[in-house]
Image (spheres, rainbow, N blue to C red):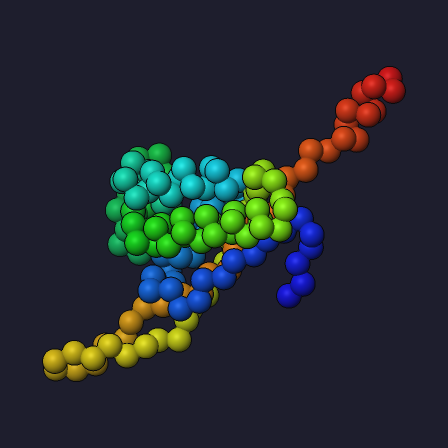
Length: 148
């Protein structure tokens, strides 16, 4: 995949988090600025804000104001780490700190075996892809106002 000059990307491969929880967190963070996204994730980690569950919400408790929701702490910590890495990648590319999450997606990773005493178990895993884009203020609106 070829990136434009105003974007930066980070991938999390085989992260030890649930794919279903990752999808719900992705839906919450999509089209938000990185500053807002980090604030939301810190609030989820501190159990101050719940993540609304829209797709994988069977037997999920109701939260005030959002409907079914949970507090995926481990997933939020991994996403916070990925967003900070994406900001560092953007800074290395020479972009400003004005960034918006342009693309975020989670996919199922290959399942790994975990050995136990009586039987084997499968471990959860997810691949996460995050692309941030630099926000550029549009100068066309100001130039048309000045002409009139």
